Length: 242
Image 1 (tube, one colour):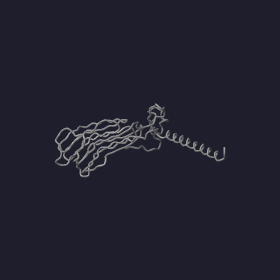
Image 2: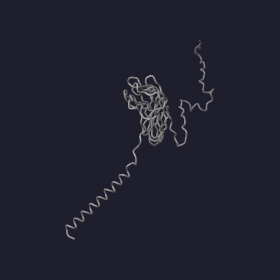
Image 3: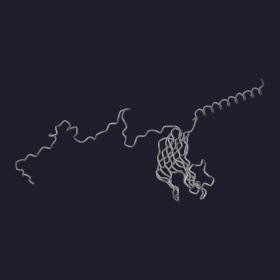
């Protein structure tokens, strides 16, 4: 074999070795990469779009410990008001409850949505009144909304009592009520502040009693013996009267 041929063969062997090494490194990296990213649970009260706007409020999210929120929210003009809102989110858990939603002079509700380990359930009634329509959501996988309220432009509303399946093109206002999403998991257990920690696994915590001065010394003394001795008069002392 000539020197040139030997050099070319040696180069090909080195390149082949580098290629195999790169493939092995890529395989090792893929094994270390998690199969899926950690899912964050989200729960929100209401959101509004259209002639009025409101970002999802109140809203909480967590992929671990449970977080909660609640209260009443409204758009800037006060045309849309949601009351009795409660939200909760943690690993594998999301809940949203809205007691009532007032749009103008019409009030509807209550609504609720729950997500547990990737499965959702919703509760809420649908219907229409004037140009306002309530479309209840559907239970399913991963995420859900309890209801979507739409208000059509003036003069274009429907008086039917059956909610439409999709918002109309002339919708002036869209309100999303009680939205949740979650994956699978279990939130960590946390003890409330002030809870004593057991000294041994399975042993109930023992309440400690503070020691008082003289407790040990007087432990075996009869109660009558613990009283202070009465002063004895001494010769020459003046009696105290009063």
